[in-house]
Every structure is written in structure tokens, then in C-alpha cells.
Image (tube, rainbow, N blue to C red; front, side):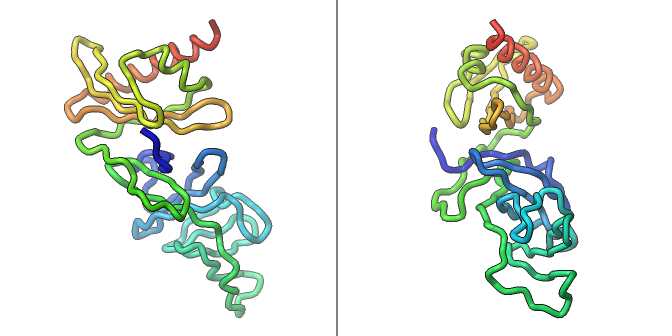
Length: 208
């Protein structure tokens, strides 16, 4: 399955009032939730001096840059410049926005002009995210029960039980990050331990 949407995290990792770093392919992003829960994702550079917006802080329905305190609303537009409190910021001062959607427990990112909807993963429970210092080929070699490209799915047996597993693949410069989901009845602790073992096995493949 190929889609312009890429998972950047799980919804439980981004509560209201928090900003985190995200990534869409090679583009670094700041992903945040306002106090009311509205999602936004922008290129991770303040339009003023280029400071990472993911280092900023959320106040109500705005995100403030940590460097000079420029304040941006959820639409990406600059709302306030502390050094010039009486100035109404020009509409041209705005962060470059991406599409960000929370669906089925997953945070999805895509360019602002995306027309398709994110993939649906109904019936699965989010487990955790983990980073691997290897590529997709090593992961597939470590676990043949999983099939796919951007989204790996399959039935894996461990602990004497067959468990439905879904791994959302997020590329990164030094490997991949996996955002894992599992069947509704699976033991989350057991799945998390299996993921750790899978990471070790996949990274060991690279070292062979």
C-alpha cells in the first residue's frame, strides 16, 4: 500500500497543550495540540529566525517560539510579536503548514494539498513507537509473517497465541521508526516485549 500519509506517532503520545517533533520523509515538522485539542503540523522552523518550533511551548490555542516569543495560531499565522506589542503582524508571516489528522489512535502527516484520506486501521489498538537503526529490508528479513511497504500487517504467534500486528513505517535518516498497533484482545505488555525482540533481531541482521 502506498499513500502520501505517513504516521508520525500515536495519539496517546501527544496530549493537549504539547508540541513534539515530527517528520514527513525528509521534512522535519513541529506537531502540536492546542489546549482544546486542535492539531497542527508545520515545518519545524520559525519564520523569524529559523528556530525549531518543536522547542516552543503551547499556550491555549497558540504556539510560541522559544527564541523571541513570536506567537502563532493553529492556522499557522503569526498573532503576536512581543518586541512590537502594538503591531498587527502581516498575514504573510506564517508557518508552512502540513495536514495532520488523528485517526484510529494514530497521528498522520501529509502535505497541505493532500486529497486522499489517511488509511483506516479500525479494530486495532495502539501499542507503542520504537526506532530502529536499520532499514525495512532487515525488518522484513527478521519477521516474514509481516507483509507490506508503508504499512506492515500480519498474524504473529508468540506466547502460544496468534496476534494481529500492524506496523506503520516512518522513514528517518538513520533507519526507520515503527508505530505499532495490535488486535483488540492482545496483551499489550507481551506485544511490547515482542517488538523489542524484533528490533534486536532486525538490527542484528545488519551486523551479520
